[in-house]
Length: 150
Image (tube, rainbow, N blue to C red):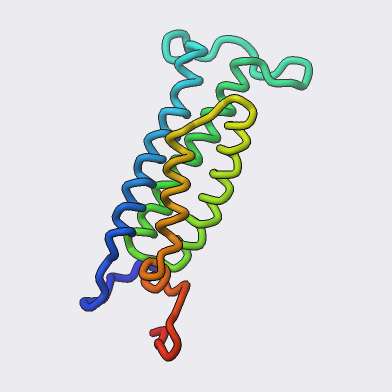
């Protein structure tokens, strides 16, 4: 499943920087998973009250849903990070799609008055770094004329 990098294949510095950016996003998403639960008081009082009322979410249900989504994103980020550090082809594709979606959501949040500057800056950095030629070559996204794909 995971391949060990070949002796002649070096990891570009951009790959390491992207990995750090993914890790920072992991921490941000993890805090976003914990914060709604802390604000609603789940850690002090536990689950008190219904999650649904008249087929709509209560504040408790909304906090649980929000926390679950961010926890899922956080764990997914760790899986992508591991694949990215192992320089798997699929991780570049997943990370590029993820970054595009995340940046779009962050920009919508910015225009609706809820900016998350850390996520926007990280997404922009990741998108620019992923599109460097040496990063694309190492993940076999781009090849030069006459270059073999082994």
